[in-house]
Image (cartoon, rainbow, N blue to C red; front, side, top):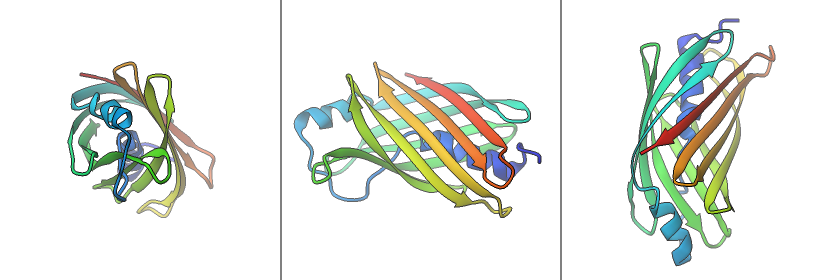
Length: 175
């Protein structure tokens, strides 16, 4: 199986940028939770490697801006091997659930919601979704997005359920 076909790459890069994502429900957050998310406002850049049956460099940009109702909006773009993926969404602390949530939409038909938990002086989001790509592949997509120590780190994996093949990536972001 060629793990680096255009659709597989798009699914993988979509998961990378899930990286930084949204809750659609209104958020009523404590001031400290709002300040924590707002501390990540700004423009971020990341470079990492996507590994499967081959390796490819992934270059990403991410912009976090103030949103409505104490949310943080984000938009991002990743490029590799001539393909581009864009994502957008918001980050929020949902008081009723007592948790952070991040959701996203992308130009690769991937959408998802990640649940975040406070860890140390930051937030770590975990996402696990099962999707079918445009080629009919049954995929399990997992991502860990960490907003820690004034940095954003993304670890991502796409498992092709029928074959067991895996694409993995790590992308550290900095301002």
